[in-house]
Structure formats: structure tokens, C-alpha cells
Length: 383
Ligand code: GDD
Ligand code: MN
Image (tube, rainbow, N blue to C red; front, side, top):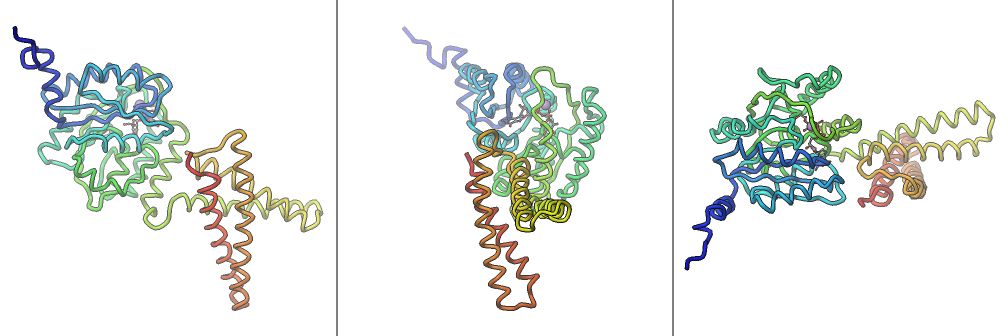
């Protein structure tokens, strides 16, 4: 006469126990086309995290291979598994940030989905935090006992070491593997830095460490970086560029937006392009000055547009017809920029003829700021 309730049915009871108590540890895993790796990773987490209240949050950027569907299928049977799906967005760091924000667990671990990070050290990372030994526990390839194995290649290893050295220039803590994507930290600590994170690129640990007001206490736990078995690496040639943006942002982002710096650098290159074309047409080929100047201006604007499109606004890059339309809006904006530039410069020049150089620079600055602001909201507005 008694119905099996959650208390009597052992399977239901276990499922109930898993959800009844909130997770004490959340593992945040960014994914992009990792479908075959999800199941094996969850199995391994089950093994190494047995005895803890944990959950895993997969943050998927709408992978074409159906990663999110695989996660959701698992999540229907396993309350520890969660899927956070992001649409129309890409980016490893921001995916991790949103994954952390989505959980309330007081301890958070971050790791890759592709089984390259050795989950066996997860308990060790968490113990370091439990014991209050450090604020952040980092899985490290470059401390005694760690390594990158054979699959890494001499070139990638050299690049990784150079990037590590560069990281030291923005960090106040010494660590051997600041580029690691495998680490654990206390949630309250993350809350303290989250509004200062730049979110650029893929080096989220570096971002967190460099964003802290006080130097954080870090402990490194060695592990062997494993070769990837299924799927492929998403880190392409843009990675070095995104890394540079992150470092620049950490250095000067408080004062000037890093994109403005990029935009101004591209603008400076445009001045050189302009002068080169002018020189070639006017001096070299004997064109009329006005014609040469017009062509040089167009070439410089086009080159500025193309460079900004590839570097400054890589994440919002135009292609195909959109590229042409973007170029036309850029011409229009720069046209107005010239008017602003000349207007300001002439007004200053009228006040004091001596300060002609200052007047010219002020005009150029106003023109650049206008071009930057206007092209940001028109040419490269967020989709
Ligand atoms: N959501 C999301 N969005 N996930 C992404 C994106 C993205 O745009 N790009 C990559 N990922 C996921 C991948 O699916 C994988 O789970 C993880 O982020 C790492 O990407 P990989 O493409 O495998 O990078 P890697 O192996 O070359 O480098 C990784 O390991 C290094 C050593 O720890 C990264 O984590 C590096 O940051 C790290 O230094
Ligand atoms: Mn990988």
C-alpha cells in the first residue's frame, strides 16, 4: 500500500541527495566543438570528485557539432551536469566568466573539455583552497613534475615560454605557468575582481590575477598536459594578437580603451601610407597635386579600414558585402572627421599663429577621437 517515495526508492533517493544539497564545488568547462569529449570528462569527474557536492557547468558557444545537445542529454539524467548555451558569441575568457557567474558554489574550478588537463589533480587543487594555503590553485605544466609531453612541439613550447615571460610584465605574483587554463579559486575572490576583468582573448587566469587589487596567493600543482585525442584546438593565429590586447589592456586599460590605442596606431600607419602614395604619384609620376592628394587620401582610408577590420575589431570583422558597406560608412565618417579636424585646428590657429603645430595636433586628435567613436557605433557596431 505504500508508494515508493524518494525516501524508499534508492535511485530516486540518490538523485534527490545530489540535488538537495547545493554544490560546494563547480567545475566550469568552456566548450567549442567538443561533443565526443563530454561523456568521458563527466565520467572522470564522477570518479575524482566522489565524496564532494559538485556540479559541472559546460559553457558552449553554440558549437556546430551538437556539443550542447550532448550536455543536455546527460543533464537530464544527472543533476550535477548543467549546460549554459551562449548564442552569437565566441570567446574562451568570457565563456568562463559567465560560467562562474552562473553558479553559486563557493569553490570554482576551471578546466578544458578536451581531456588535456589531468583531472586527477582536481582534488589536490581543491584541498589547497580548503586548507586556506592559497587564493588560487593552478594546474601547472612548468613546475617540478609538470610537463607538456611530446605532442607539444618545440615551436609551441618556445612560444608558450615567451608568452609566460611576457605575462610576468603585468603580474605582481610570480608563477611558472600563468597561461594555464586549469585552476581553482574561491568564488568570493572572483566576485572581488569580476568588474575589472577585461575578458579579452583566452587567458582568463592571467586576467584574474592581473585584475586583483592585492597580489593573490597562488600555489601551483604540477600535472602533465596530455595530447588532445578528439576534436581540434581552437586557438589559431589570432591567439597571439588577443594575448597582446589583453596585456595592453591590463597595462593601460584603466586610462585609455585598448581599442582606441589600436585605432590610433592604425591611424598613424595611415599617415605613412598617405605620404608614400602622395610621394609616388606627385613626385614620381608627375600627377597634379590635388589629384595625387585625393587618391592618397582614399588609399589611406581604405588601408585604415582594412587594418582596423582585421586587428582592432577582429571580433566584429566584416566580410563579403558587409566589408564593402563597412568601408562606405568608414569613408563617410572620416569625411566628417576631416571637417572636425580642420575646424578645430583653424580655430586654434586663429587665436595664436605661433602655435600652429599644437593647433594641427589638436585638430588631428579631435578628428581621431571622432573617427574612433563614430566608427565604433556605426561601422563596427555590435551585431
Ligand atoms: N565556449 C567557448 N568559446 N569555448 C572555447 C572557445 C570559445 O570561443 N575556444 C575554445 N574553447 C574551449 C575548447 O573547447 C576547450 O575546451 C578549451 O576551451 C581550450 O581550447 P583548446 O582549443 O583546446 O586550447 P589549447 O589546448 O590550445 O590551450 C588550452 O590549454 C592551455 C594549457 O592549459 C587553453 O586552456 C589555454 O588557455 C591553456 O594555456
Ligand atoms: Mn586543448
